[in-house]
Image 1 (cartoon, rainbow over the protein chains, first blue to last red):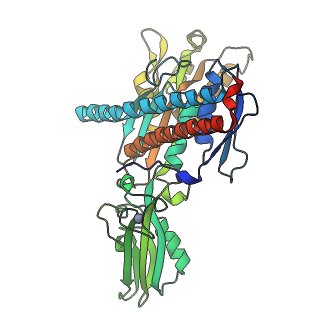
Image 2: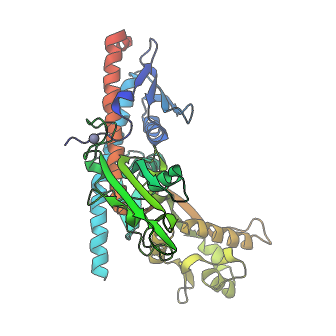
Amino acid sequence: MEEEPEGAPRETRTLSIDSGSDASKATFTLTHEDHTLGNAVRYILAKNPQVSFVGYSVPHPSEPKMNVRVQTTGVPASDVLLDSLVTLYKVADHIDQTFAAAVDEFKTKSSQRV
Amino acid sequence: MERGKDERLGGEPGVEVLHLTEDRITFMLNNVDISVANSLRRVMLAEVPTMAIDLVEVKENTSVLHDEFIAHRLGLIPLRSEMAAQFNYARDCTCDDSCPRCSVKFTLDVKCEEAHRRNITSKDLVSEHPDVVPIDADGLGDDLGGIVIVKMGRGQELRIEAIARKGIGKEHAKFNPVGTVAMCADGAIDLNHDALSTLPLDKIYEFVNTPTDDPPGNCPAKVLLYNDISKAIQVNEQAVDEEKARDINFFDKMAYFAEWWNDFNQLKDKTAPELIRIRDRPDRFIYSVESTGVMPPALIAKVAIDVLREKVNQLQREVAKGVEDAMDGHGYAMAM
Ligand SMILES: [Zn+2]
């Protein structure tokens, strides 16, 4: 069985990109996302030397909407956003792989102690 | 690049389990930024799928509580949710109304025949699914042996059909699998040995373990030792490890302790040095996750990490597609 993605149903999720004529700056508006990913994405973008400005906002708490504003030193803003998501994915994937081993390790250790 | 490495923090994210019981896990997450650590905390609270009663049909209710009151109480009963991953969300399911792939039927059919009163509890709920059942609440509270839904007098009757569905805490708090998720930065204890060596011996003993009249002046959990031979105070690292696994507020308590003693040392001379300092380790976070009983605490953390990863994965696909569409539509990438 294919795993359904968690969260809101896919058809109601939207992404809009407001970029004007210059691809090096853009505002990405994501629905059904909030501080959970917003702040983590902002942090990873802020560390990228190609990013000259990044900020995110949740304009209203009862509206399921989040904005990410990115301005780069020249490369397309969407490229660095995608890069940041790849990095965040790797972090989450690595934690996932480490976690099960850590639980097993603890169980082994505590059974030896008894 | 190493997997998941965060360049600024200079190491791979790591996990260490500090403590694990039936209803609580305490673990440390290393080499991540607070924003990523907070994402995991938020997902454990609001986005780990569980099962809960979502639809209630009241056939007969002569109890003292009205229908809505009982429906609300049924919704809040924690149901074992290890199997939640195998269910569809009702809104995504192919069925019209409900089916075994997205729903679990519950029935409650009781009439009070006892002379006085009868407690109707979660144990009176009959589930159609062997693994999606109310949590075992024996030993909780007084002599309940189940979570009380309503107390009925003689002759009163309650007949209900209910449907449990899969959901997340973001939709309704009844789907929240945790009692609490506490998260704090790991700490470190720095002793100023030069300043401490100027203290009289009785104060040194007091600093290490003698209770003072003022509670913040008492060292939490005896994590400091005085070595009579080397005449130096040491941090008992093993005690610190045990204590932070046991008590998420340990470093807060240490901070109060430090403040009290630093104030004491600076009473006469405002420029006197600090005796002890509690430092945050902003790249290491301790989580203490308490399950409501719907799944084992380690599973909550595990599912939360999976959900976080899949959220990012989904967003990545959507952004990639959104960018492609924008390029097709407006030639927006031409500016480069
Ligand atoms: Zn269905």
